[in-house]
Image 1 (cartoon, helix red, strand yellow):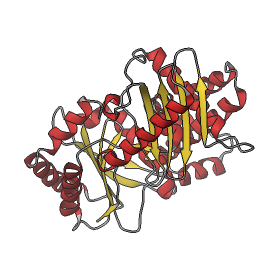
Image 2: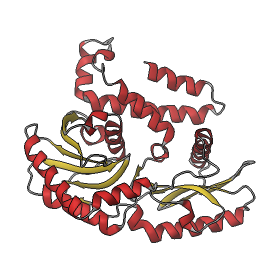
Image 3: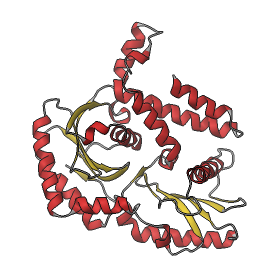
Image 4: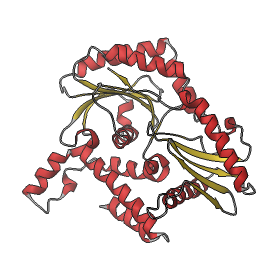
Length: 349
């Protein structure tokens, strides 16, 4: 209840009511999905069919940390706004080695549905059964489960999770483990078989041994420590920051926020402007492909094309023409680096 009150209060003090009501609805949908991931839709339905005024707090006791963590992530991460997941930047040969290692170690396991390697709310590799795909909403819930559970760092865990977009009526069983001490890479092996803990434990050991042999864990740690990449790599001196969504893969990339967004308040202010650009460009009565917006501290530009969404911040004296030219150069750089920035093809078991 406290989560709901906080979200509603946030809307109540906002000047742009329509925009923040839409944001509230999106956040409530995620909160609902988080509740389903803990209980499943079928269990919720049974509870409320039996008693319409059923107090859900009893079933959710002990899971408040997941709701709190999700709300914090939604405030801080534009991937929720854009309907995309963050992919950890890695050299393509490293990612290929990780993916093929997972395939080789998991291919003979029956009833294994997905194998996912994540690191600090970034997807590193994803492998699944041929007929199944993971929706970005479900991946966000997986990120949140890992982010909110410090206990996963202490030992291998066996936990049920319902992924609403995959199947809201039942649970998958997840073998969850970090691959090494002080390593941010967390492996999730999702199965429909509740008795597969020990086969998945052996599979996890084989994956870890091979990734260590090929120095993949070090590559993951190095990328995270560096923040992926710097905005300076793009080669546009006037560029402060950007967020890019690949529509074909529903993946997002952005560099860490550097100067002038060094403080939490400044980062929050920039994210607020990205929300504003996104809202105005998606107005049903007048959708926009490009939007130029000037403040006293920066120039902001939004650009929508068939294959991507791009939002960027520039130095305050940049003209519209210069900003558009810089965006073109930025897109060219992303296309050149896309094998490092994104998972470009799906791999099946």
